[in-house]
Image (cartoon, rainbow, N blue to C red; front, side):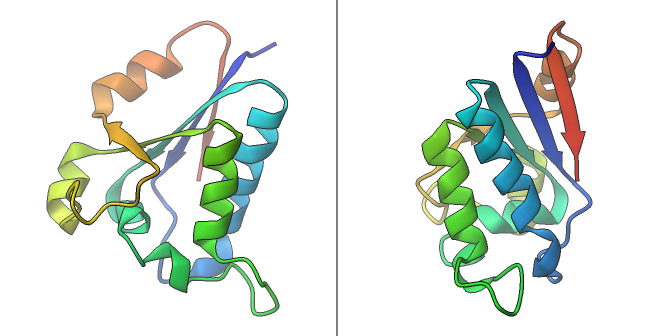
Length: 125
């Protein structure tokens, strides 16, 4: 059984917020199950790490919780958030305009190193 979950957010599109709640809900559940959780934000998903961006998005028309609220739930449960350094440059994400939940920048090598470890399950969205 895995003791760590690594989540890659690559194919999600912030322009379609209906897809954005699930990864963070699942990350919060995994962390509540005492699994170590890391979420890697790549490509356009790095926009979610900008102050104000995820807080204006809702995963459904009837949702009262924003995508940022789901992100905070996951982070408070113990999930770590890492941005792709190249995507940070591409989308203008800096330490000054990032949400406080951002735990740092990590590249593809760090991601591959994590997923190659024994006991790690990988989810991609």
